Length: 80
Image (cartoon, rainbow, N blue to C red):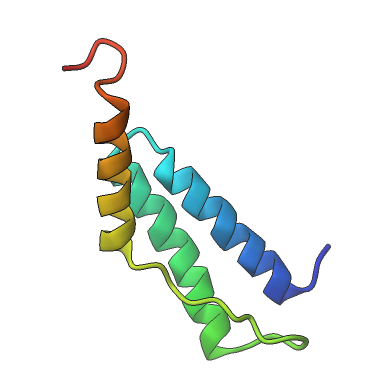
């Protein structure tokens, strides 16, 4: 198991990828809210080892990027 800080950075990166690929805005927000809660907790009580170095995501910015990506990809299956 990697040390807490690198593991959190990896988790945050994976969460961002998952959020940008999510099928709905509700799921984007859920993914980011969950990882941001863990990031904030680590920022308040850093574990031993290297500093976490991460910060919570700007949820509105990621949602905007998600919307732009979906608009560029066109309507999904059976969608308008």
